[in-house]
Length: 339
Image 1 (cartoon, rainbow, N blue to C red):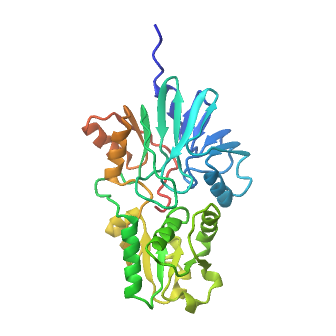
Image 2 (image 1 turned 90 degrees about the horizontal axis):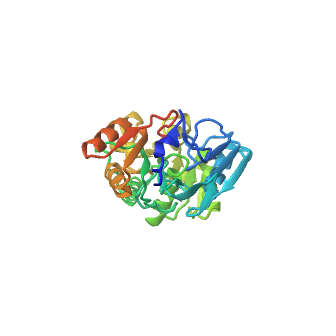
């Protein structure tokens, strides 16, 4: 008689600020420096500097080097989406997560069992990254950023049209668009381009390096110009991309009476827009909304769902109410990343 496969939670488990695979002796998105890290994507609540060895997509590695410097890890091993390697007998594959450029789910197989650590993910269309791939599994580790029924995101194209309609209605006012500097900024630029806007788009310095990297990695963002290198008169009536924190600081005063826009899933909550003094809220998210989250969990057919970074308790409660086994991981150090 063959012995049953060991339960996944006996060899894959949370360790404070990350998830550890014991037979493979590696961590997924650890919050502290470790010997061997598998990184799902480049956002700072998942990708940190100081690891001895990093396994990630080539795009994520490039993003980490731009954000933290060339020597931010002892060594890097790129793994293409869809490729599989063995780490100490554990099968590891990176599957597209659809979150940002280079984002991946980590598919781990050992002793006849499969776990998928999603990292952050979305199901919505995004021209700047590979679409999400559904991977059936025994254990699905999911984010819960927008794990409340109120969160239902708009299509990014619809919100881009709203921005362009405002631009047409207010042609003498510069439109400042606050968007997180990695992923959201570049997605908004590309979606606006897809709506037919071909004029220069102006960049705050904080979003320039990663936008340049996206272009180098094959994501066409069109004509981008730095605000600091452009005459103020030329910018008037145009689109300026900036980090959300810049919307209300001294930097924004140079634009006179701008229309302030903020691209975020949190703009579904009206109080968030008022809190930031936003005139034009744009409900654009790089995470799954509530319907997509529940759909994904059901479609994975996972017998156990582990929930992390977000509305963990709310999602665990709901899954229990529909007969799904779920638990909150309560990992330390995961945040909203200005989503």
